[in-house]
Structures are given as structure tokens and as C-alpha cells.
Length: 105
Image: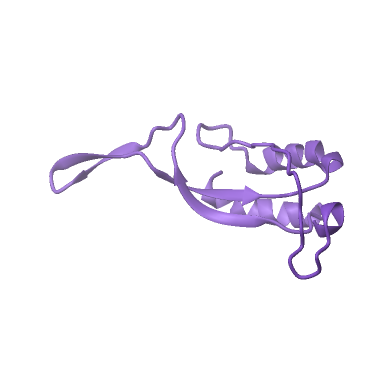
């Protein structure tokens, strides 16, 4: 998603009682395909755009509500707003306590 949406989305997720998240600064491109700039008189295609990646692991019952929250908070209506990927998590183990499953979230 767009870097300028990091703080608003982080605040919205904490307000929705999301217990934790991982946020990474990443580079990528999709339909935007970057842009051209000139460096020392030569056109250079910059096709990797700075983005922010949020990773959340939540109970299945929370997924649809969080998808709505993320879309409402992160959308600008322009190309480059990002994507949401939903994947199953087979197992979670909290390293410190050994807890497994939902208790480890």
C-alpha cells in the first residue's frame, strides 16, 4: 500500500483491537509500472515504487471486517493503492510460552 497511509491504517487497526502486526518498507510495482526520470541526460525507468506491507494474523471471524476497514482507510481511488492477500495459516506457535493456535495470536 502507499507509504502515506501507514499511520492512518496502523491507528485504525489498533482502534479495531488488532493485537499485533508486522509492517515492512518494500519496493514493488503492479499496474503503475513505475515512471521515467532523467539522470545525466539519459532516461531511466524507475519501476520499483516504495510501498508499505502490513502482515496480520487474525481469527477467521475477523477477516471480512478487517478487509473492509483496510479498504476504507487505505483507498485513494487511484492506481497503486495496493492489494490485500488472504491466506490460511497452518499453525502458530508463540516462541516464549509454547502456546499454539489462537492462543498464540
